[in-house]
Length: 476
Ligand SMILES: O=c1ccn([C@@H]2O[C@H](COP(=O)(O)O)[C@@H](O)[C@H]2O)c(=O)[nH]1
Image (spheres, protein in one colour):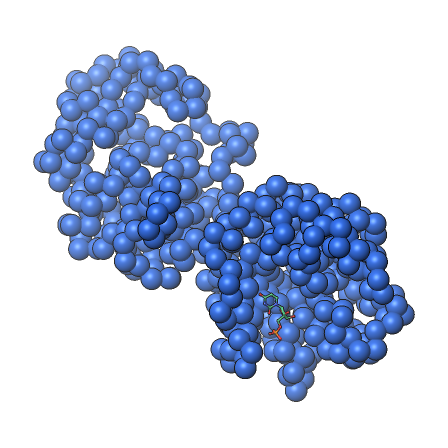
């Protein structure tokens, strides 16, 4: 028997003796009956066993490179993560299950910076959903998570679900191993071992269970997978276009001359998935402008998108959307809306006359310096979006929000290869950063293309850089 085998066997027996592992008939969280139950909460009462557990976890985390911080999954794994932190010297952050309604309102406590790589610490993994909840809150703070060290893998599909979400699980013990050690140590008999094996065989994750599992992190899914998850038809179409044309570039065609817009649309059409207008800045606008624009969009397979940022009461928005000289609802498949005035605007867009193929991008954050938008406004915007799943195509924002809703599209403006800010407070990030770090699906580029000496070459370059960053994002 190897030293490793002996060490793990002794540890399994200790867990049995302190009743951290029990046998009998137990009901699980989801209402199933299980013959074996783990309750690692008792471990805080046994410092020597806690010490052994942290040694075992430290042993397996040695192979994981570039960790900046640790985070335990609340609550059972918090003391375990603390023990690992003390032993390794790695700083720890703590996730709250709910934000305080006073003071800082933070979900993640402790010192960290955007881009930090965090190792998750957990006691027992069944479906992996608790780990994914923690990962989601960390990601929302810009903290990256790729690995989780756990004491016990119950071998019921958690590893598969975590892997699907970009998290590698490293377990000290599997359920099969712990049972084998306990049989060898005569803590349980082989009849119980068979009972557990039968239970495991019957509760393996099926596709149906997997589909009920927490939604996959959108940053890890391909656009084609996400097109099937989109509830708004224009979002589904945009995902398909992005995938087929291999482009996430949306051109902000902010020119004031109708002919120049048409010429640019024709030239960059092959490289974009959407063309965004501010129709009211065109000095020579005439309804004759719309048909050729629609024709170019159809030939080059991109979506027309009016960045109107509707923000009035519902009735006024209904007119602004479908009436007047622009008749936006007749040609723009996508429009932007401020969440400021609430549901009325969305009801107005939904019910207005015009082309029924329509989708809305709700503005949750802006690229403008000194914006008055607060975290709570952003959160309320996301909640509003969730109430209109068939109408909302996505969210305009600057950070990786709504990671658990892969059917929505993140649209991020303020993208430029160089120049950090313009003279009127527009803030820019590079194509790589907005995709890799900020979670952008579609990136909006305006002056980076319109003011380039060769706008077509610039569009090609932005498309290439953005697609490369997206391909890398879903691959790692
Ligand atoms: O937060 C926002 C929302 C929308 N925009 C729009 O995007 C383009 C950006 O143009 P650049 O020339 O690339 O700066 C423009 O149409 C804005 O109205 C945004 O910039 N920020």
